[in-house]
Structure formats: C-alpha cells, structure tokens
Length: 209
Figure 1 (cartoon, rainbow, N blue to C red):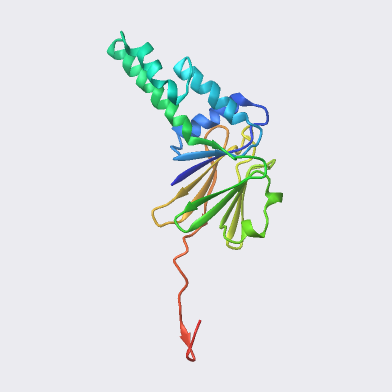
Figure 2: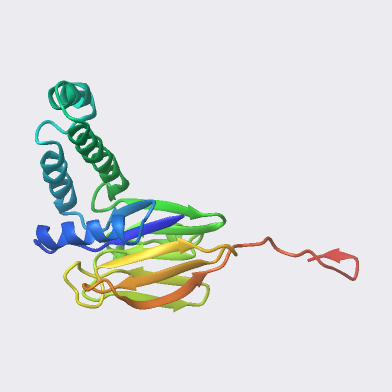
C-alpha cells in the first residue's frame, strides 16, 4: 500500500491542489489523507471535479453528463469525456480526517499507523498499538523515531522541505516514510516500521516464556 499524507493548506488552495496532483500523479498513492481540519481539501476537490466535467460532478449525474457530451460526439470527444470521468473518479482517493479530534487507523500488514491532526490529543490507547503516529499540526516536516515508534508529519503544504509525505509498504513488509519538498524532490526517506513477525516462544526450566 502507498498512503499519501498532505499537510494543512494554511489558506493556500492553489498549492494544496498542486500537492494533491503530485500525490496522485507522481507518487501514485493508492489513497491520500489531508491532515488539516479546515475543510480546504473538500473545497479544492469540489471545484476540481466541477472543472473536469463542466457541470454537476456527482455520481448520480453521470448518465446525464454522458448523454449531453457523447450523443453526437466524435471519437476524440468521447475519449476526452471518458478521460475526465476517470480523473473525477480518481479524486475519490483524496480523503480528509472526519473532524478535528478524529483519529484514523491505517494498517500496513501488521504495522498500525494512527493519523490525527493534533498530536497533543494522542492518548495511551492511541499509542499502545501504533508503530507510526502521523499528525498534521506542525510548523516543520518531521520524521522522528523514539524506540519502536515513529512520529511523522509532512508539515504545511507550503513548506519548502515538506508538505507531502508517503508511507509505502515495501516487498519485505517494512514501511518506509518519505518527505517531499515543494519542488517534488525527496527530502528525507527512511524505514520507520517493521512487520511484527510474531513473538518467539522458548522454554526454560520447564516454563514457557
């Protein structure tokens, strides 16, 4: 799995859209989560979808759009319609945290990641099962390992050395975190979690341990 992480927009919808396009097109994330709680991504996606289909972008209106666009269209125009609809569907890969206090749990095989806007709201129940703790509220991009846990934040979307992060599961089951700068370059990348292969049981003095 490849999970994109997009930092808060800081009232900059233009840059937010550019970073969302980067996550979808360049990083090819399976899904992406916006870590702000200002509703900015909802607004960006709404306008983006409307721009693509030049009308009501809802699923329920797809047949109406098809009738209007394709009834007397050329093959080239039909291909353009289908391309726009595919892109509209792709926008569903962009998600938001449900609300300011919400936690979202993501599973990479046996690795648990908890996503939240403000890490100050993390409690013991959040931290115990999690190997990766992702948060949005941060002035700087962060990859910081403490023991077996990693704290990760992409930082604001306008940050020159961050704004976007990617959690990617590798072939060996390790999870790698990468930070991407505003120019699309990799700023930092490291393995932040390894799969739990299960505890080994040994017997010493007749007692299992």
